[in-house]
Length: 226
Length: 349
Image: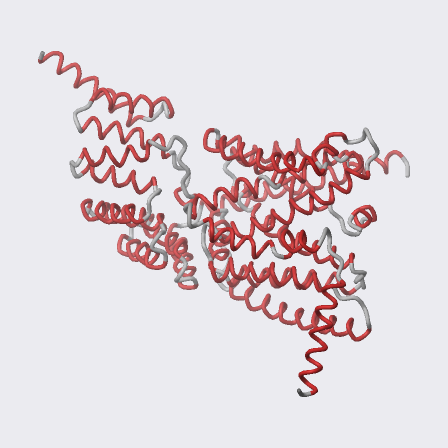
């Protein structure tokens, strides 16, 4: 074997595998991703409707269908899908969270929150559920109860969530929500502290920035009154 | 007592005799706990653990400490064994840099390609089982030309059938492929199910005929190979089709896969470490010395612990590290464990 052949012998396994990965990447970027981006939301509904018909007893398939219905604002379909998921698996937190969101979109905050409290009671450890309860209670003006639920979420420094929620920064969202709850409860110092913690984690969060500005304005008007 | 009963009794005795004659990889107790019985053990352990911790937490613990942790023995084998490293010096030096760069790029671009790595994960589960079949065959001198291919067909057709039949993996595949922009036609699932079932049935029939022929012609038949296949595929069917739990189906499969892998790697590397001359591969020899089993286990759990602690703190870097070691684990496994290699057979004798 001459030097050139030896070199070829050595380089082939080195380049073969990463080369395949690179090729797969190029195909994904150039062919598959643009196709996925052009896909109409309705095609997702049709696809998951058929999947759910094939696997009616599997909760996550129903959850996925519910999510597709939510995207096209088919609230009735979404509610049915999430309810089917809960019937298939009463512990499926993604289904409970989805149902809560659908009920709230339909304006039934009290009903949604009551169902969520019941679910979280039977399935402790669902932090997304606790956060949804806290935000529901805030909307209902029950800030003392909301404080209890948001503190449950905040007690977990590094919460882990299911992949179905997507890129969810639960900790930062919970800090921002805690700010709103404590502001509504008339505890601006504590609210400011939570907002600032949220802002430290997500500096470009416009909503939190405006909440802090609002608190400052309130402080200013209180000083002027005094 | 009829003649039929007597002949059935004789057949039963032969099967037990054959089982008793079979050569184990390590020892009867070790093999039955870590290789053949580990799928059943995984089911029992997982169901027992759910009494104390939630399914989601348990699934996360198995994924982190076992699935991620079991990449460590691969790296010990690839880099710390001086012979293995010398044999694959270029691959083991250059490929990791290329892979980490590519994985980082894909992760930053949020490419769905990385999610599809789980297909390779499934493939390497099946290849490991096939490896055990080959080892038991090799140990028992059952190595005719038709054997391995029949085993391979059996492994894959049964696995594809289980995957296509179960709700759990149908969901995982549909979801990941859909997210990646690939919409598999709806007829594909039922087609895979029916075709894989037909192939599995056909291969099972051929397999049974082959066993019968071997018995008739006095060729060795490895009963341990059949036993490990029954426990593995029985538990896969249970986990993916009957149990079908989003957190624990994969957890059960991963738990026994990792137990088998870590135990085999320990046994083989230990033999290899003792065969090395003094002064060569000192770290490899240290980690695989009998009295340092704790160091081997600690190394596995340390990587799992690192992932558990730092994953939530720095998700992207830890994801990149885990995915890179995962991809390299699958890739390296394709050439560092080769039953056909003389050294491998010799060390497992």
